[in-house]
Length: 230
Ligand code: C5P
Image (cartoon, rainbow, N blue to C red; front, side, top):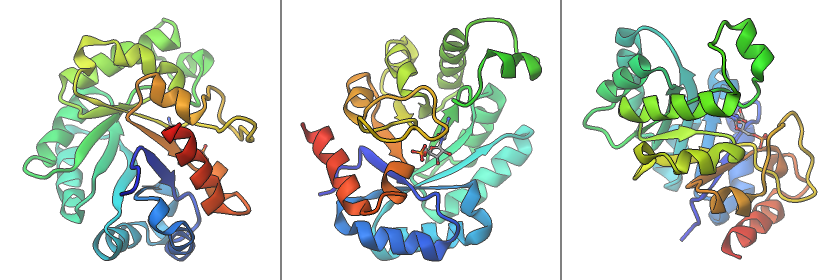
């Protein structure tokens, strides 16, 4: 059985490249994230193929945000694709509408609290209320859980704080920004190792470049899986 705590981000240009990578990873990886970058490159078709032909689990990272009626309609449509996780922004009206759209389907709604690439200056520019980023993340996570979110996306450095919230009991924490010791950070700022992220309360880690940009993606994935086992 695959260790589905590892979710590999398929941040490659199109479905063909995605399929090639999943073939390289074979049985080692059972859970894939498909994001906005692949939407016009056949992302939904790839999601469908990985699910129905290969039995993989799929996380569609759409980070939806709109009026409630539009979110509900979009999520109802996406729920037909037999996806496992879908992201929306963590605003309570968005989460409530997404849960309504997903009702009757097993697809879990994960809320984005504050994008991990944003710092206080970005929040000021966006007219987001005063406060330290971690405090705002905890508050948004709590509100998203109250609105019915099945889980949240958070930086690994926020995982322990969110796990400690009473509202987080029984909910999922999924962390990108994970880097094995010694690997390049890229544009990620607040990172942790795979083992640390899980120890801090993450249920799943999302890893992209350290696997898909590696010379040997399978070896890179297996090293991360070994770290999780250890
Ligand atoms: O290559 P890397 O491991 O940094 O990829 C992380 C993945 O997680 C990317 O697909 C990125 O879009 C996604 N992500 C993130 N930070 C968030 C939400 C999603 O890095 N807050």
